Image 1 (cartoon, rainbow, N blue to C red):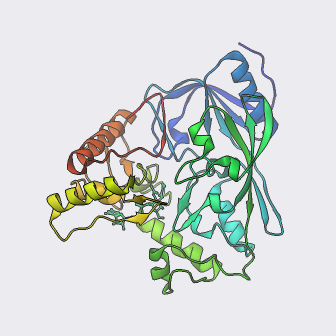
Image 2: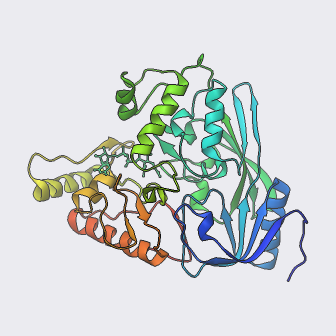
Image 3: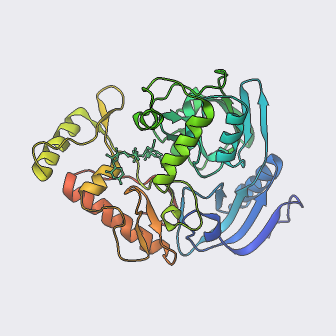
Length: 359
Ligand code: EPU
């Protein structure tokens, strides 16, 4: 066993990982370390890489499906702290709790991430899948990501462009073993206490304004929190609808010809007047709704009679009712994927990262 590199790192053996995930699922890690500074994070990563030990990074645990057998290697909890504002420039340490950081920017009168309130997880996870909700995506405000590059052994600063952001995707997701996010930098906007222009119809409607208008920052944040809570998308230990990873599947993006085939299939199955949700997704592409597909394939809210079920508040969240195993969850996920495929010919792709298991 290699000698410990840094004393302050908290270390446990054969440690349960389930309590570190919002699903509360998964077996133990051979070794679990918690790092509270960037240097500690880098030291643990380097040590794992030098000794060829598998490494699992854990932030808020809100997007992780860990197998029942657990993780044979080093699980590293990134618990670094740091929130610093310089005018409209914000820098967050990877371990900062995202929703708390959003609240602080709103209190400071800065716009740009107020609609991302209530999203579970850590700041360092946000660039990885280009977190987005209610018309905002972090790719619109991130200027730079500071990361440890496991290939070169150096700390690097990636520009927004170098992060290669797209819908729920980035360079970090396409090359998952390479970077460890340490800090995320944002350019926010001082709009005199107002939000960014509202881009999501549901949010504008709830606030009684037209899309494109600005509202007081605090109202935007509170409205989003209310909408999210109504969908079971705000963590609440008492509510099993929130023992989830938020959206379990990404919204499918189809080419125009594929979308036409899909529309025909919808009319065949659901009747002539029925149109699937369609949102523009770049030149020649249309995004449809995974929640809608799941619903219309017959998996309605609350579906299931086992310990893993579809949320009673939103069809896109798979949930642990308390006694589920990861296998129970995966069985449900596979059933949904197969059912949607059979009904509409579309294969849903999971959004959370899986560890030691696959769909
Ligand atoms: N719908 C149903 N049944 C349901 C819920 C929704 O049929 O139970 C249909 C409705 O037609 C609705 C449509 O699905 O209009 C879209 O639903 P919603 O507005 O809730 O958005 P979503 O596409 O399901 C996405 C993100 C969420 C984000 C919301 C709000 C993805 C995969 N999900 O969900 O992000 O909060 O928009 O912006 O992009 C997450 O990524 O974990 C997440 C929660």
